[in-house]
Image 1: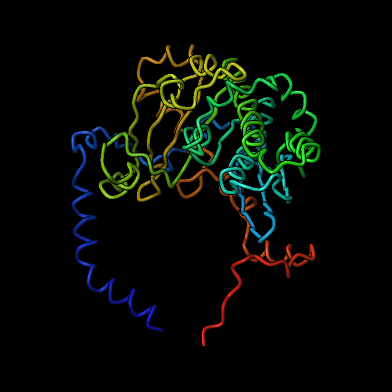
Image 2: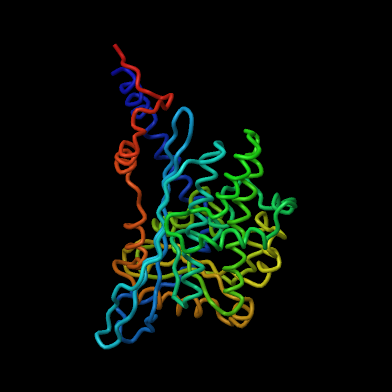
Length: 386
């Protein structure tokens, strides 16, 4: 047990040092900015019948887990768009249709497991977003806009500018065939496996990743086109790590959580999406030009006293963004809409989507056994310690 005792001893020795560092970081932020936190009457105190309530809402979340073996990798992906429709006679929401994707498969060719299944999951979420926007839902995505577009952060989408073998139109034709296939996460996978079988090479990872990224940015371009037509897309997260509001070593959400307790919000003027995710611009599928026509409004909000602090972002068309004379008023009105569909300070439809999309590790193990792969070597088998 000595290996446990060593960590306990380290914790005892360094406790005061860790706590002092945390307190120091909390105080290292622009205190004038926190004064801009607009305290408002608890959103939940506003009568629900006095609020604008969207007639159709969609909440989207996705989950993924890898399972590595010595000779191959499996991925598990689930994404749900939970949809609610307002029954105006009863003034309550009822469940509508659900757009869902559940996929289990081998990663081919093997390699870059974490990055690639991240892209696979993102593609499923983008498909759910696109379908919801096209069907005129008030759409909320769990997470941040920048994260969905930019991650994996060390892979720059400009590599798609050199994807000469396949155009945006080529990829679009392939992936649209599986758009409504709820058991396929990545439509371009069929082409990748076809190339892999013909070439019989193990060095196709770069092309595979380009094609997978190509599918992702094809869907991003389609979503941006919907937004340029006048539609809006919300992103909501409780666990954001960005720190560009307060310029601190700690996240903006943490600072607001520590320094305020009442309902309120802070925001700023919207910016062109192309400036926010500049490193993710690519000419592929016309994404760079579309990013100039879509703006991102960012802020933080607590929808009820002592509730969670949320990062709430809104993608909206340029013509709407340029017409905003008072960002605070505009943002507040959007928060009222979200508050009207929230429970305990968080959008209820996103809570439902998160529950549906969560993948449990024990479920993965049961499925692996059911597939007859439980005895496959992983290379990490436990070694009995005598």
